[in-house]
Length: 244
Length: 244
DNA sequence: CGCCTCATTGAGGGATCTCAAGTTGTGTGG
DNA sequence: CCACACAACTTGAGATCCCTCAATGAGGCG
Image 1 (cartoon, rainbow over the protein chains, first blue to last red):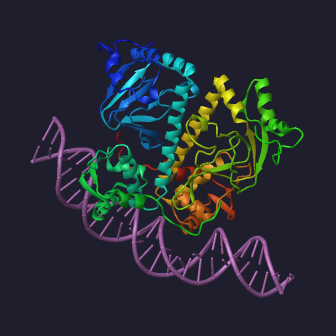
Image 2: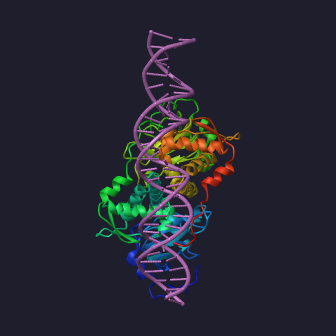
């Protein structure tokens, strides 16, 4: 197993902080749970920092990550925004490679990760079909989310794509006051949305002019009319309908 | 179990045709395999026809399907193009609903499906962890493919998106002569690629003018310069690089 | 302050959308 | 076989949107 003098491995009760947040997708019988928690270590990642190498199986306790697909030009393309409860690296034994399966993973906010022992976790998978089913459901949810991104990017107008992006970002991330923090620079967000930073900037200000949002600073907007954003992002009626 | 007088259930050796094509992802011990094949029925779907209601667990033996995510306007958005070997509906027990999990599934070509017995299949899943791992790998591959679609749709230019689409469509579907059948109407394909049918038509003819393809008829093109298409679809160098 | 990065704004040209008309191919009925 | 209707694709023209290049703020840092 890994060394015990990990940056955060020396704390007196390694499982205490983990236990407090352990997500429901890892609900387990008490004995198993205790063993898993006992073998876990807590890792914290600063906003903007990448997932360190060597992370094997891990569970995201708090914060939000960005999963980027590496591109030939050295940058990445946003591909998913897993939140608390996501389990990383558990599929590696299923035929893939490392914990991140070849993706770049970066923290969008300060994140807490529970590093789990692979051997123990794989044992749990084999003995608890229920756990495996929950993790499969998680993978299916991620695939579903990727398909929502597809629908979003298929909007012909940049302003509509931005509206959809804000809705997706806010769906699980927005506090009550409607203030949404945008954890991307303009150039990166533009790349994800299939446009350029200048056009994206204009799209932000157009949404503001239409009263849908208010720009607090380049990295934060207040959602004023979610319904308006949904309209722009959603349906665009076209020609007469027809089957394939 | 289901009735035995299914349109194709009355054939003398229901498993014979299935056995011939049974994909490797369903490789099983001989006895299990025989039982599964014995309980299966063969279904054929014409090109353009939707997957009939009531299909539970099924394995695609030949042909290609389109998975469409239903949209508010009644049309769907293309979300995946599973080919032979895909297993449908096996995740329903994992928390979701029907065989198609809420997607519209349509045959792009004449397809052969093996309809499997759910109870038997679930038993197999529980007793053969290897099988489940292969199916999980399949789900992960689908998620991966959805992410490729994301990259494709993030291209700012319609011609580039079309080039990428042709590459994706041809990756597993192209015969040796490079003639690619396009199983979508212009308006639908335009919707999937985030543009309009007129612009898409012009993009096709631009690709032809550049010598990358030759338009045989509206539903078939010959790929003349795959490398050129890859270039257009692939990398688009942008501003100076930077982390998130 | 100088220097850097990032966001914004402006201007011009190119790409795309939209509406409209023309073309092709197919099936139907005489 | 031909006339016709119909659907899908193509082409054209003008308006709009977007990309590109360039210049200007705004903020952080030595």
